[in-house]
Length: 253
Length: 249
Ligand SMILES: Nc1ncnc2c1ncn2[C@@H]1O[C@H](COP(=O)(O)OP(=O)(O)O)[C@@H](O)[C@H]1O
Ligand SMILES: [Mg+2]
Image (cartoon, rainbow over all chains, first blue to last red; front, top):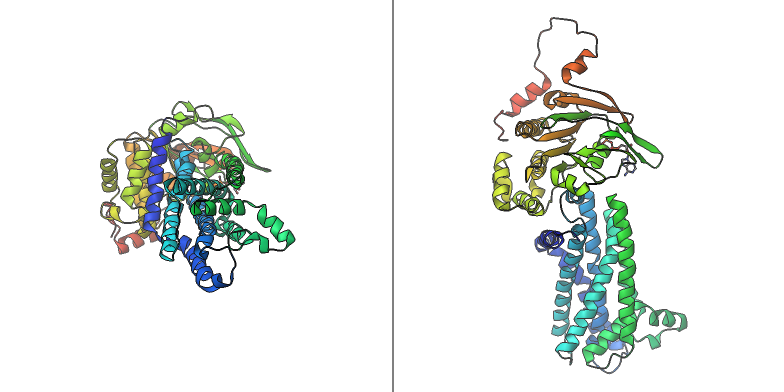
């Protein structure tokens, strides 16, 4: 590894974080949809949804956190695309820096921005009556899963960021990800769904991740579902890194 | 460089390009749109790999010693590569830090002064005019005083004032001993700035020489007496008051 990798990544991370600090609207637009859904589902639709015995906001929050991440990472693709289009990416690549630092800085920026968004959404949920009986370890486990999921989706976002031919193309890829939670156990238990839909819902990544988060928040045993959730996260991460790496190499040569 | 070739799919952009640039001189590569100037500059700045041929920059091979080449060069691309959200000063300190220099702040302030950007230095680049952006862009390339600088069409899209500002900056560079390879579509720009001029056409260097040598390629000029009219540029510049002292507006 290049001896400047850490220093260069830190400098470029500082640059991107400054972008976020100067346009906090990227955080606001990331959290506004999840918060609107939280309000809509808890106060308008929640009364009609049968989702166990606890409060519906407790049931709902894990899925909303997934949606927050899915909408947040589209900004990663967006920022990366703008760097490529504006020529500053080439400027960096022609400088005596660790070249991969340019990509890593975007990835770390995405982690920071998404964590801020997640904290905002959790605070709103707390204000709406969300309560968790879990202890420090439970919260750390939740944080671990969310960080891993964010990392996996961030690398997924790097692919359109490097390959898109327009700004819209770079950020539009996130839409299907935002809708994946709707066909999962995020809003209603999968048992209420018709056969084929149910089969899809129970075997897609969001359900296992949401169920694990829900069990952790409730202080219940997570069971074997957590391994399914972790396997999905790691699997997506590995595939995304491989394809992003290929797209990157095509770009710099 | 010797026998440099590059194709994009079927398109043979460079078909064997050879030339040398003397240390500390300004070399202008003249060519029309699409001639392959940018492609050549990208190969020399290690952003693209050539299909064939070799090039040596500051004693380092661009393919085998890319990292050493990057230590020795600076690229000012065809479109100003500045960070719009950061201020001018922050752009310069960013580059200084990435070049692992001490006193990034001092270097930035110094360059802001040299390029008459001190006043604007604290403002976001998004508020800059085209000429100011280009000057900042060139200033960013000077951070750390790299011995070789590539300027890809530095004045395309600038107004006459902006052009003169850039020309002044380039002349200053060469007087400081920096080797400058400049590409341009404008004949007068090459004439104004360059020690040597090469014309890139259909993937090859058509001619390469000093301005005088190129002039001798044509039949000797007839001597005619003409009343000297001010050029439109003279008129424009005197009306908008582009003084030669460099401070715009
Ligand atoms: N990445 C690329 N893929 C395909 N064709 C390209 C690419 N880059 C440049 N070209 C083509 O190569 C030719 C030379 O381009 P360029 O080097 O940008 O010319 P110039 O800078 O002299 O205007 C043009 O016809 C351009 O369309
Ligand atoms: Mg060009």
